[in-house]
Image (tube, rainbow, N blue to C red):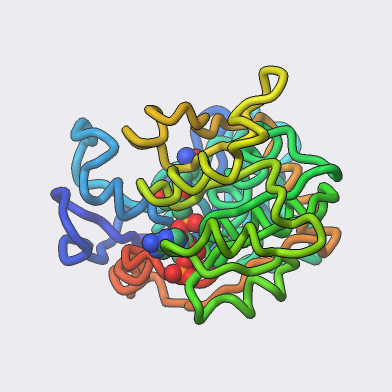
Length: 308
Ligand SMILES: NC(=O)c1ccc[n+]([C@@H]2O[C@H](COP(=O)([O-])OP(=O)(O)OC[C@H]3O[C@@H](n4cnc5c(N)ncnc54)[C@H](OP(=O)(O)O)[C@@H]3O)[C@@H](O)[C@H]2O)c1
């Protein structure tokens, strides 16, 4: 048998329970991966609450990303062998062993630890996608709303790797962390626009925005800061949000679309030492509820992982 964290109805973390299930057998195009580390994301909180639609067959298992070791390989799979270390995206990652579509797995670079690899498919891939969508390059000053979180901390590092200069917003307690990531930090809140406009060395002239927060406040600040530049240039959005809302749509801010190949790109950046996640909390798989609850609070620095 193999352990997994199940939920039998939608709700809060109190509905999560550890249980056993049979060891899966891989179908055509599938791998069985013995997970070593599982990333925890706000998407887990939303899925648990039923915000991704109520059509799930219950019980379900949370978790959209993990890294581990291939234990079995199904028919028709090329490029993977038993014993390979891989990172994958999909659903149902909060388990000892997951059935994984081989097309959604990548070989893990040897120098990237399991916990670092496990947090790349969701947050870092989304950060990469948003920056590419906004056409960010060396000429840009990018403002990242929520630069201390999972997506934001990756966005700062990826934008720097693309050659851009970055202004990152966070709470007071995370300003030094954002500076260490390579951005100029500014405290979020009502004074944000004035604080950015007071920055020296051209940093006041923000040319692109990635919003990982999506509040009415950040939407308004984005519109103000991009006033002269506009929200779009030559058909390319200059602001991209990870959190679509009535306000972002009304303001004309583009919602993130997924970029094919983003996981391969962020894996390459991690392998090159240009992208690292601060793993600010680790929990054993059996304590998944505590991990999800921490992430639900919305103030995690970097990432939270489950160790299997
Ligand atoms: N569309 C997609 O494909 C996609 C992919 C990944 C994530 N997302 C979404 O993107 C959002 C962020 O995800 P994440 O993993 O980065 O979350 P996270 O790790 O919880 O980060 C949240 C960030 O928001 C900041 N924050 C909290 N309250 C704020 C406020 N009032 N004003 C400004 N900033 C505030 C936090 O800063 P402090 O900790 O310093 O307070 C932190 O930097 C979530 O809604 C997630 O579901 C979407």
